[in-house]
Length: 171
Image (tube, rainbow, N blue to C red; front, side, top):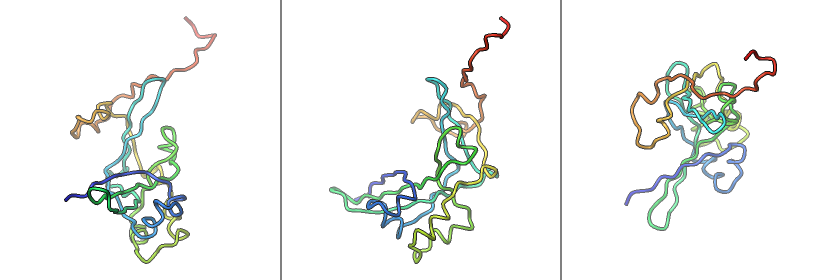
């Protein structure tokens, strides 16, 4: 019988205290590798996806927590990505972002002997914007059936940004 996986997002400042996340925060921390993530810029009723990644193109490591519990039919594996306030690059699109750990914090985050939030929470800070890059991508990323590396190809930022016309503009 296979386990089922569910995912969620949570704030670290409450994960260490909330009943659903407390034990995983204390005892089941993990790293979740990713090449990048998407956020959407909204202009009126239109949205444009943006891809964010490390500026050097390397792999991101999200701070995560995991747990396994016995579901009614089979075991359920859960994982949650911890979020922090957005850095200056992400902030125009979203107020929060995944906690991206630098390599020098991997061992401390994964240390099973460390369970004190006071020692773990300082590791969870926004990744510096200078270490990241982003660009607009095709809205094809919104389709579950779409796949391929071309989804990450930069496109012209065609989301029209409405601005207040001036009374004194020449016609």
